[in-house]
Length: 498
Image 1 (cartoon, rainbow, N blue to C red):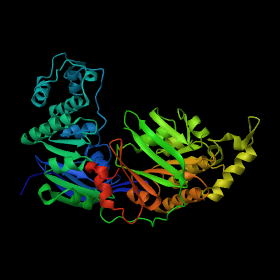
Image 2: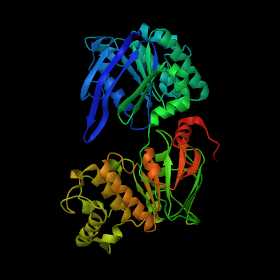
Image 3: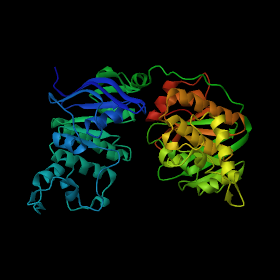
């Protein structure tokens, strides 16, 4: 029997109104590369945060080298021997390599840091990449070499386990190959790698074992040798997709609400698509695919190169104000920080995108403000005491309805919805879907950016599939559409579609 370095037994994690992990159990073999896979929201990040001490578990037990393990902080986990290489690297650019590696490991006397170097740290660095000089500043290094510095720090703390979360997201092909060589060397030294990636070709190449999570539940843990191919893995990831029945909208394909030509940013590559009048267009992709970046560019929140036509005319969308003037409104991904003012009332939030509806000669009309708020409370079903209730005390679903009310009051021609049902319960989701469909019936066109495939399939007339900042396919939502083909494309498997 292989030796298990980690035994995860019946782990559950509950947040307010959400069960992020539900009775998850599996083991990790010492010295292996154990890959975690699953769609967005499957529970991968929550599990990693529990292992690294960022979140406490709600229930269950973790055994680490046979002993119960409950880290109280990330520092506690690192001292115990579990290091983590996050997608957003935790390095200080203005410090040297040696200073970054020694950060938190410095030798002190009477509280004063000794100037003598930690030879062990530098030996570790040279062991995994001798080309990096300890005196170099971090800002001079590529992303790949910064990752090596992070790994060296973890090894310097005698880590038995190194977790790598989407480590290749910003690497070139050559850098990816070098990372894989380092992982192979670490395994030979008896170090265990927990590897998370949406790139299934990486999983198939690297994994000794694969664990699949779905909707917070453990679906399967298998040796890589028992997973036949990408299709086999995708089937485990998606299971049986349950969705609302898609109802086609009355799309007028002779008229384009928006034409997007060659939008490019530091994260987007030559994005091209059209939105027809009366259409709900869906954008689907996994984390880092570029959904939010497209939404923000169209709303004028982020600069871009390229051209956008609204109703056939070239549009200047350099600011949200200019986007609103062209009839484009956005329901942002993060409602509490970007969509609503939680300290204010429903009545104060509702007119924020269009004060002309509640003012005259520049003066706010409080009676009109209350009237507008009550209109949306009734029409989209915001559950509240009255229009003067603070938004902070509404449920997540009702807060999202306030964001929708604010956008509807702007009378948009095009409504952008970035993760429109994130963090809301099933009942509120159905209500929000009804609101979106009704808006489109009333003459608006919509673009839904979502990481939930059932949501996209249940709502949208056409679906744009993204991977790594690029449009990989645009598909009609009809009986020929196959979930497995979608997952193949958005995990980097390529497509014959143009």
